[in-house]
Length: 109
Length: 115
Image (cartoon, rainbow over all chains, first blue to last red; front, side, top):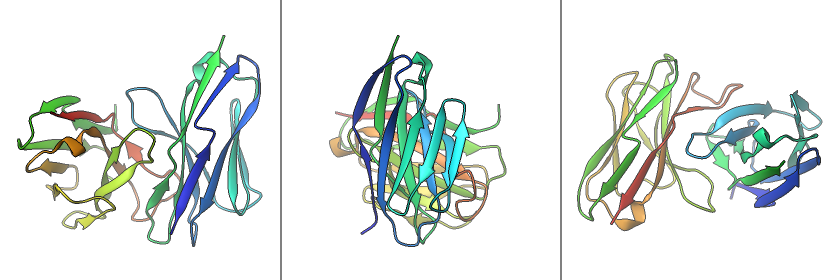
């Protein structure tokens, strides 16, 4: 069964304290690994798509990486405005997204 | 602003009542989706429409029906609401039949409580 698992469930960091969020996946015929950001009361907002192991993408303080079993979202020197829930999803062989439950990131000033 | 618009934003229903959640997109996307989001769980697909005139069941379709009214609009109907349907509902759209490079564009959600 296809599955996506995110860890930790919640992460509290001080402003400027770098860390990583994990997304483990078992999705046969993976058609892309997607990262989204979700703010309270809003719908998910697209961040990155990764297609092959070794691929990396960056946007401001965020960098997403992909291996054959996991994806990491690295956040460097975060600011309070980076506080949000980060969701990852794997595209399956039917072109549907299999979603993780998300990591709630809190950045304290 | 271009995007996905959902109405209403909030709704409280009594058990057994019916209602329709509306969704419209103005990006000329072919595919549209309805998801529910519950605490501690990933988004779960209820129904989707790969193109105008077609609809298919997702992971959790029981208790719901959908209508793809035209290319822009995709509605979700609860015929007899149950407390288990208390959730946040998201509509999404995609410009390609597959996933493309950008996944889906989401609306801001409808927060439904069934008492």
